[in-house]
Length: 322
Image 1 (spheres, one colour):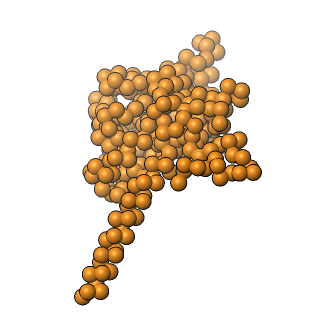
Image 2 (cartoon, rainbow, N blue to C red):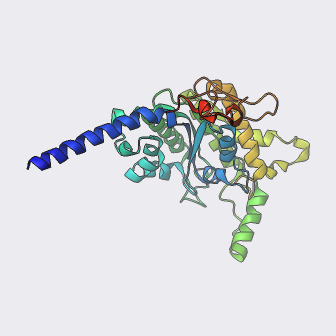
Image 3 (cartoon, helix red, strand yellow):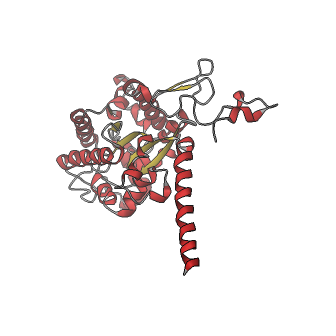
């Protein structure tokens, strides 16, 4: 019995010591985080082949922020909220943002939430599926008023998890190019193609306006990619904005780059405290001459840059990282 008490004491002490050590070193190891919520246009935003806008964002934040892609292909806002109402969904989308893995399931504890202040930005990007025609695609269709309510719920969940000051950017669905959608329909379904459009430019416009309205009412900036894409090509050139879409709905390489560049522009204007100033010589945001905003953990980035390391005495550059 005496030996059992000794072993129990050793276990308790070792556990407490381990947690104490983790609590001490984690802030040094932790990079800031950016969370992307959305449907397939977000899920595909890491695509190398399509020059994904999420990858564009990760490139901009090299060694300063990890970008977490939580896009769910085919989801509308109803389904995304259903997912977030499950333990798996909560952990996948929110709890995993806590770098203290042992406490990741204890999302309601102050110890768990204490680490959420390193989440610097959330993008909420829905509407492409919600805006489906109610008659032709009732499976994906979400009525306009409920769509707006769902967006508000998503924003509220982010505030509850990451704090009331969390930065959020709402992104509208892109325009829909009818001819490209009909072509895609034939390519995919052949003789079974109906020739009916379950997603239209008019519906996308209404849901884009709804996103802008929600963002305005909640006091957050919005990226109206619907309007930007239509305005990017002069009227006399017709519908050449279709180049931004791979199938009339999803983003092409040009569309991803277009969105990524506009998103970064918006961050620099609306949230300059988390923007990155590029190197004045190269325009690159991933070297020692680039500078992160004051709200980022380190304006220099994580770890010494290679040109700050003396090859004859490299250990000097790493002093203070223990």
